[in-house]
Image (cartoon, rainbow, N blue to C red):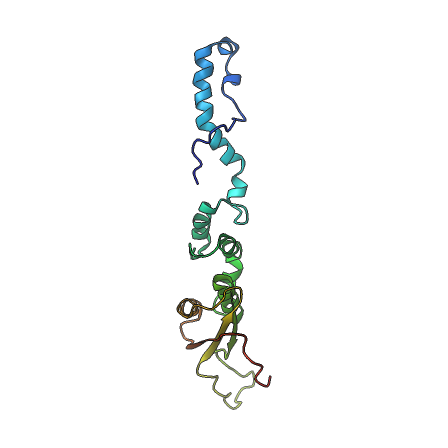
Length: 187
């Protein structure tokens, strides 16, 4: 999309009408300023609607990549435009949840349209009681189970790429891509 000359776009502030009365009937001055109006009309239209360019829900699609760079979102052109808009709009929230179960589940849902379940936290344990017995070791690995949601199937390579990017470095994640929701295993 181009915000250059837009055929037929009228200027809200025609220069010819703002000239001194001496030039009001001057054909050359009116034609010259009309040419400037054609060039300036898209500029004025863009500036008048600047707030819309900065709102990812209504910004032109070609501006989403630029907005994504502002908020640190990896903009994937393979995503549908609505998914890209949601990723930019929710970027700050998802950055706040980065490295958590919720952040990983929401990141996978947003990026790939899949459902996910994370078991094991790979985190630290502690006790508030001085001299207490050591707590049991946390599970050695975190399991991320993924199954299709809005997509017909889950792309395992992309799932692993996102899990690798969103999991903390010290957490060893194992990924399982399932054909459907996991069966209730006695929970």
